[in-house]
Image (cartoon, protein in one colour):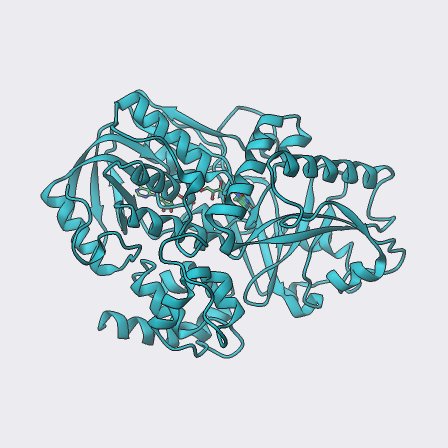
Length: 518
Ligand SMILES: Cc1cc2nc3c(=O)[nH]c(=O)nc-3n(C[C@H](O)[C@H](O)[C@H](O)COP(=O)(O)OP(=O)(O)OC[C@H]3O[C@@H](n4cnc5c(N)ncnc54)[C@H](O)[C@@H]3O)c2cc1C
């Protein structure tokens, strides 16, 4: 297959035309070094790793970038505290190191430091629990230091008084409030944006990123690809095949056994909680290690999550939260609020499935979040498990395995030093344009804001949402969105609240029609 040529060579632009050109090129010469199946954070990370090492790489995604679990996360870039609590120091450190890579080099433009606050309310915490949490926070701080992340980026643990607690989370209960413990972690403006930035950067290094293309009949060196838009089929041969299909991994390679676990979040208006600027962390009654978080989000919402429920059976395209999960989340968070939230406050809810490796009995909460790279008898390399935070390391391990097992001609991995599209240091990034650029646009696009401004008008799509027409035009011209659903549900996250999606649908449709001539 010829590397990306013509107007797209060396660019991070993904659009319908590039997709068509690259599908044609693949049909003409269906031989590649690496075929990556799955366009979530893991597959996009693998494609970037491989393309940056000089491998001819094709990524196929059955629906859209970030269609699966990667868009349903809590959007935290974790420091590994959870692993530390269970004594897995090496994995905990790996998470802290990857957080540092993301926040200092590869994607600082998409991540901010989020204060996470545990209110010191006597009836919320069991005797001794505050000391345990404080010790855990300090251990997390030690991890941060060992990863070299400066305190200026992620401030160290501290205790704050009741007045400051109310400033950060105005809706917190005040009767008996003795202040709060505060630790910091990273928070993505949006998880799907990380996936798109990875896929675009991979494309810039020559990877073909093909959405609406499903891989079938997959072996260690080949797959049949079906284009959902044209119905066209072709068989590619590859030096190696990496299965990065998350909870669908067992459908691509039947030797993989997973035990998915559902995590649910609900969304409320930030105004209802007084526009918090910190995450409220509430212990789950009866557990020493589980918490419910109220996390401030873009688009004026707070996400409250999350659950951990066994989800056996067929894997749905879009998992649905259960009524019991919503009650659990509301009941838990309400214990820390001055005025209880009710069902009427819930503006939306979403659920995702964790792709956990089946290790037999026990609860899903006890299954390791470590990742695994597995070679099946047919030679397919599956990379599964892990976290959004550790995608880069997962990708490195998967490509290393492909190189080792299949003798691919690759250079050493260097993604820890490779800024993604929009990051400072990326070749197309520019400093923030002077004046008049909404902070929300900068938070979502970083150093690529100048390209967004050139793509369309800065007028909001609809009243009350800070997404502009320019961002929709840019989603279609640069971010690989092919239709209104890609825009509403993955390039922007307007679709998380059904009512917002309905209000914005017509305006999005107009921009899509303008761009596609439809
Ligand atoms: C509720 C929840 C909260 C989480 N919160 C966090 C967090 O805050 N921080 C963190 O670091 N991690 C978090 N995680 C973990 C993280 O989200 C996942 O580990 C990660 O997103 C998995 O990504 P993936 O790319 O492996 O899978 P996916 O994102 O599911 O991607 C797999 C892709 O493969 C595609 N596909 C499937 N079959 C085929 C086929 N035959 N051909 C082509 N394409 C195919 C699918 O359409 C899909 O897009 C959370 C997970 C959950 C469930």
